[in-house]
Length: 83
Image 1: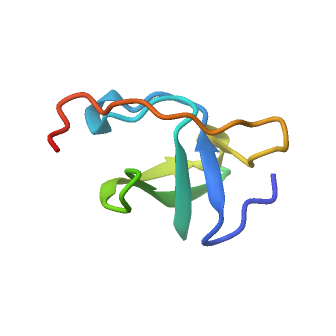
Image 2: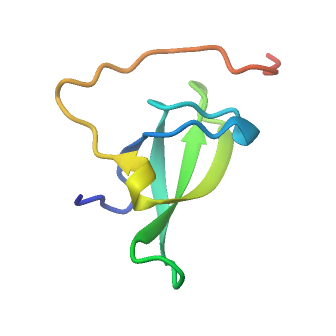
Image 3: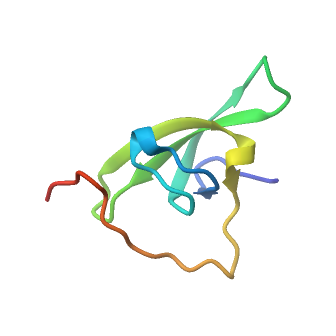
């Protein structure tokens, strides 16, 4: 997987504690070496449609994938979100 810093990535797992779901799109903001596992980790920032940060999470590379031409963005209401 060739994830690039400051590019979009798609979450492949739910992260309920942060209100994130599989398919949410975020931006890679940092890359980490994870000594206890043999894969890289990334900090990913997720935004709402107005550009406000919803969450910044650190996940292993296996929890992300690159966008493809077959992906279509969609919108959902964040649970607990206030306007």
